Image 1 (cartoon, rainbow, N blue to C red):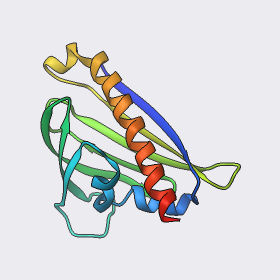
Image 2 (cartoon, rainbow, N blue to C red; image 1 turned 90 degrees about the vertical axis):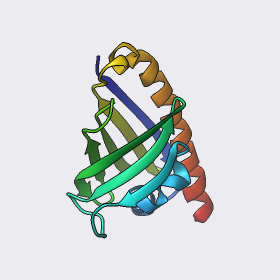
Image 3 (cartoon, one colour; image 1 turned 135 degrees about the vertical axis):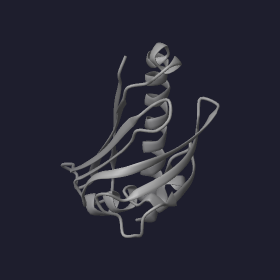
Length: 147
């Protein structure tokens, strides 16, 4: 069973500022509660084809995986994916202006769990939705406090 989770948040900061902060892998441990480490596997700057090794903790398990950047349109859209581990996944960030001159950020995770994950997909989706909402609220707090 596929997992497809989309969450959004409105941030009272300009889109370019929010997007630059959120898409910078060096900031991931600041706003993602479950991401413990990020290591560049390709030289900076961030571009399509960049590879980033992540270590995370989710549902009590340590996960290590490498994302590859598939699309990077600064200020608009950022897509990265991994084929590794029990849960190959694609993560997409999108940013849009709000009427109040802030930013609406959308975070989408989708993938096809393997093994036990297939059976647990509904539970994974609910846990992912909660974690993503928490992370977006954390991002909002961090970015708004910087401004």
